[in-house]
Length: 399
Figure 1 (tube, rainbow, N blue to C red):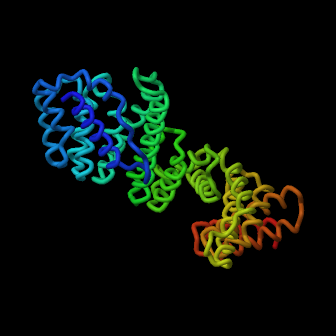
Figure 2: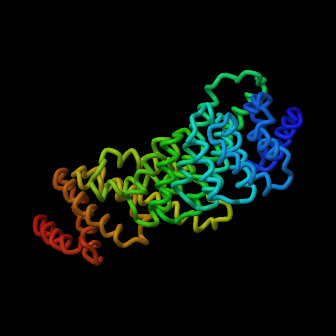
Figure 3: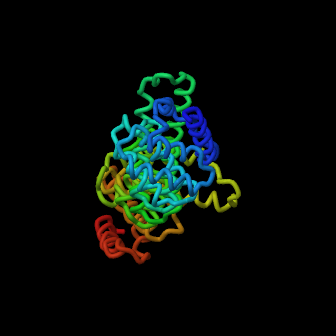
């Protein structure tokens, strides 16, 4: 009876292994804790019930026996294994809520009774079930537990009567479980257009695994969704995080520079960010399938925007020479945006007036009149002041 019991448990473990996939193709190995099973007295009621579990061919019968054992013998040595098998049975039949409930019971046990490998397998199934149910908080919670279990196995010594190769395989599997948990955060974020939800996934992943290979992609999604929703509280942190990781692009850099120009925050970052954006734009290539003319139009506008932001930043700081240079560089590429164009004309008028007044260069004053006059012809917040400036310039220089 004892030999039959051990064979039944090995067969059951192998069937459970084939039932669970991870990242398309991962294997579950026979749980090392099963080495303790030969010491179970198969003549006792609990031993007979375990034998029934191991020998059951019908999934429903097996699950019923597992649940009966867990109910009758919650303090038994095999309870961790039993709960882990119950989790896998629920997962196989796609009973996702039961997966989460049973996995929680397993994790409520102390580590020694639950078993490290059992915890890894239960957390893997729980992450998948939480994903299927679309429960963000559950995804985050079980992903965290996956990482904790992977870390515990990584630092644990090889158990007695377990081969080094088998234990190394368990460590590899645990790391893959944690990796999949990271990936789920990104996948769920890509499916969402809710800025707060995407930000929550990014925050959770960053807190859990700041070096995750999926974090940059998740932050990029957070930026895109946050910007589309005009939610700066979501978009700005994502763009800054990408920049700090050297994963930002011209769009994130120009977005940050524009926000900081408008809000008058982090002013010291405006020039470095726009300079970096201009460098990236020099080597930017068109996305596959994009019309060349449309790409050039976007590229030109982004280049104009970078110079425009720099120009306004310098103008509001009374750095007239730098403002004049940047805004002149911006003009050829911002003609399609009247608001930007009006601001450029206004500050070019002021800059050239200030430069000409100091240098006594009549040409600069002529340019000041030209740009200011152009601004007076555009309906913008600058129009009224531009008209007053034009009268003052002409009066002072008798033009």
